[in-house]
Image (cartoon, rainbow, N blue to C red; front, side):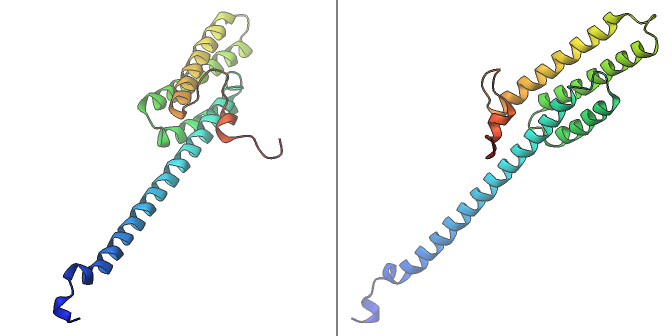
Length: 159
């Protein structure tokens, strides 16, 4: 067979296959990296949300817990996926700070501070926390009020 009688496509086919394989590998790597980044961000969000929710258990009466709330809020403000979650986290921080102040005020002057002041502040803070929790559950795809953050991460092997 003479060189001039070999079809051009037959000569170029291996080069085309090589280019297609390289492009396919690049697309696969891009998708893998994108998925890893999304997974990492989701894990960081869950961690920050858990920190905030854990701090709310004592932030109504303890100043240190309000500081923990603030640290969690800073993380959330950097990685929140929506402005609604960021605003809800901010509201939780502010209202628990106000609740802690009301608690402190009752401790300092119980005879001049009505208990209803603390109760109202705590009610507002709890409502804000519940709204924040609802938004984060929606973002993370958790259905129902009984779902927990543990369900997102799976049970630990030692349980």
